[in-house]
Length: 390
Image (cartoon, rainbow, N blue to C red; front, side, top):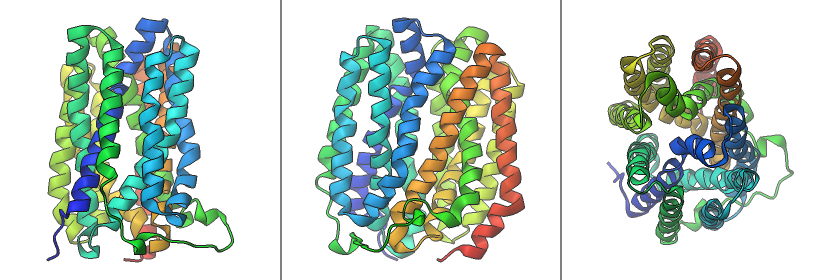
């Protein structure tokens, strides 16, 4: 069997780790940063933090088009340069408005670089190891997400200076672009299609039902990941608990990805998506229903086990329904669906937690997740099985 961990794949895997490490280093503490530094209320925090998601959403479809049309390594490095540079904006932002502008602008290169890096990673994999490789690729996200919040909390408790975290993120993202500059991409991976532009050049039309399903799952995650730190602090008395939460979440993610890789190698993609979605469903239910440390930390592990099966399966679903010339579009469609869901979760979760309660926000996440699961079983699963190309 062909080697999975070839040199270029390892470099892209490592760079992706650095990408998510730099981004997730800040994400769990940004609500507290906005509250402590600018005295922002919960609704304002939700609006400010959803800005990058909105811009990322707008950029994703164009990212897929550029990745499929122009030299992929060039697109990757240009997007990564701007992603790295905008971390410096956090260091100089002296007002809530300036921070909101830099955070919102950051969504553009973040949206582009995640599409470009994952597409190039798929390109350098051998076809017979591609499904499995997509699953392992996500381990870099999970490992970064497991480590970075704990490091962020440790560093902040040691120095009580958010600028130190911003600087660490800047340096880490710079190392990522250095690593990716050494990746070798075959010329045959560049697709130059000068045909007439159409909507399916920007969005994988066949994947509409899978996109809506993934959007519902992402809404749940957006609510939970954004507000769990403040919820834990204000209602459960858990100080710094988001670090352990994300660690347990990512332990679950990594374990399930390792277990699920064997099924992906056997092309049991729909099976992995089904198992993962059902496990996550019960994890969100536990978090919403049980208001104590058992529910808080137990849900993290269960959701991680579910998402670790579900997310790589869904990425394979989108890629397997697209021709090779639309590989970037397939990836951007998946990420666009996820961004919409997370953004809606951040905004509506903020509104519900501000005007009703945190519990209502987390229950909304579970209800929307249930709607996604219903659509999956009613339509999108069989739709994939009928329309897959590989």
